[in-house]
Image (tube, rainbow, N blue to C red):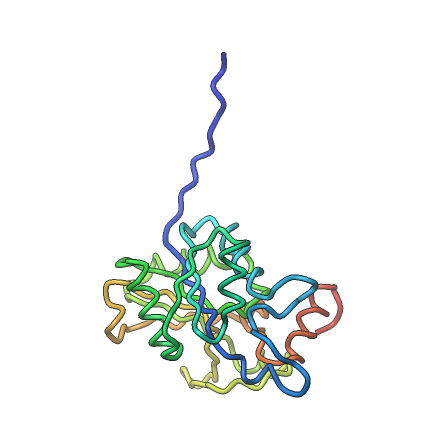
Length: 218
């Protein structure tokens, strides 16, 4: 009898999804709740990133770092996802990220992403990991030109100048887990793709994502 062929899956690093923010810019007016659970085309926002990581050839395990601000998100993921949820104490982005990576026992390079980037694709994740593997720096941070954010109608709160080009951090990073409590020299990867530029901070961002997903003009 012929033995069934088993496809060997090779992955390169774990991923940590940061999902503990309060979403203060999103929940204004009549909007209430937890941003990772906001529905985008009928699905919780966070599931887009989780599904992207699941389909990425580069990613092994997926961890989601939550906080006391998102109890519904934590409960939903434990019931519906094949990811490991790590409750953090709510120390802010950096503090909770360090807590999550240490709790996961990761002491090698790890991809850290925000949960509010629904347009990021598996191919884009794989490309970022591939570029990191060719660099000598211990860390990599993805940025996009400010002009791309402006065209999308976004108003970023952090802007940096690199070689006379204004760039915005996208919330996609690779860090060395063994150096997680240290400042790590990083390579600034600048990508013009809207997939990394459009994060959902406001209701307007959410509606813009919906239009793009339905093939309409942004």
